[in-house]
Length: 384
Image 1 (cartoon, rainbow, N blue to C red):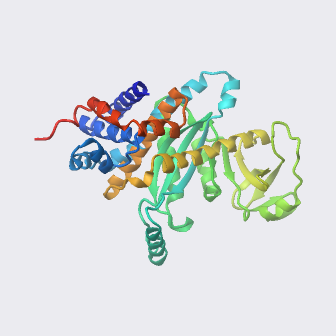
Image 2: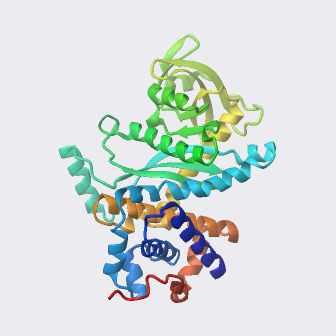
Image 3: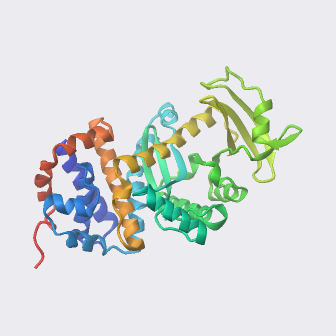
């Protein structure tokens, strides 16, 4: 484990140095040190300084020297750089292996957990009373799932003020364009893979924009209040669910399904897939390429990878435990969590162990941090 940890540390240092050439070596080593300490149960600079007897002001000053551009780039470049290797490896395999891995791009957001129940009440009251966005309450993310591996491609902090008062739909397009530009420079066409969204993002404008960008397969989760025309009946999806008959023995499907064409004033023409999941009938809206039912369900199963990523982000990396000042500090905090996830993922793949198992072992071996810190030469010496 110690050898794998040192190897992953050097890999992350080289990755940071290659993509952020204007960042000093001291800042690079400070960022990597904070990431390594996440594996040992130390989730913010204050805990790291206390455990390793380092000056707190020095750690905060170094990570506070990052600009907003570099802070945002931490959440974009590193995950995309690691994803390039996974995509290249998958594309070199046979068609059957590529089908099993089913590379899928997913977009979703999550609320950051509160430190205390009282704060959540205060924030909720303030947001509704004054209609003022509260920073760092919502994280918008784009992930890539290759088989069972989930890679964060881009992360942004947004305010959660409702659909009409937020720039989240436009920000999604901006983030997707940034991700596409990165992979285009690497010679990888991400547009040929399916992209999935939650029902909140469903709109004709988004579908048309994604189609213009080159995406051929777009999936949305359907809401019950979506009005669709199926056959000669125009009604909400909740009404259509009561009149359809699900088929039990559809090829390649492990659950009862029903597939049909539909027309909507909101979305235009699309394919609607009804399926029973955990006793409830759910719907998928398929745009672009008219997928088979089994293909649509397989792609949507990959969408749950982003929910898995959010769970790791909150429970294993304690995203709410680090809170730095200013907008730059908020993005640096998020970037450090992303880097820690990438390091955990790399060790998890090589060790074939879960995140929890790795952290459980290293938390009990916190004394090894004294040996590991010897690899951070610019952190140990005291400043004059």
